[in-house]
Length: 280
Image (cartoon, rainbow, N blue to C red; front, side, top):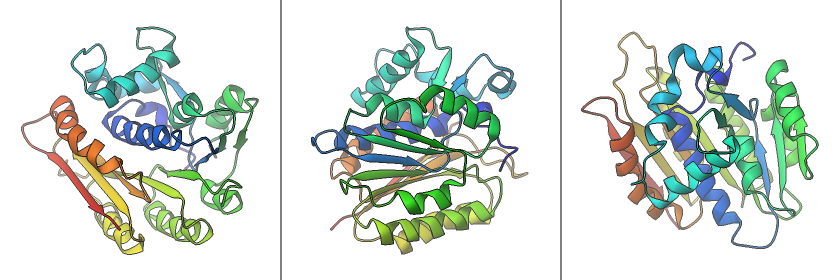
């Protein structure tokens, strides 16, 4: 949706869960020398100023990365995640937040590739100016769901796909399922990550069930609830990530991490976390 700007939400609790999970997946991919391809269907601007009008409007980052920043008692994966953000900021002052493309770029090696799609003209221009000239990076102003078809499978048969549309339109939920089904037909051994918001909409409630029905033998599903559901249907109570063909280490890593993250990010005496898996 071209009216959507992730700058309003950059660094919130949903980004924290999504980017830590994504980082763990890519760190695992880096354990083998053979290159991988990362495809981001909704890449955004790549990075966001936390002092912009957008970010300051609701200050969502203060209830996300802002709660973790400066803490010295964090688990190792959180420390790794925060270190990536410090590298993006060029120091210890939290001024900007890296989007998924920036985090993937920080983790990729000479033999790896990024394929990034973004339809919003302004965000595309920012993303292209930041990453389009980097070796192995392709930035396209086009529909990522459609663009995914021609980017799978990668030549090395190693790859990660991230799908996290705005979900402002209900059809985004169905498009995720359709694109995922097609992607798995083209690249059955690929790792597919779907991020989704916990909101009071029927398509959002149904999405994990639809993903489980679609998924093959191996998947991990993590969900974090940190604030109450708004009875009016506004706001995001939390978020989830559903990973198909995950690293075999991911479930154990998230199992030790999610209780800590919930305690660090919760905004009320409730909520919680859920971790499910299906293994071979």
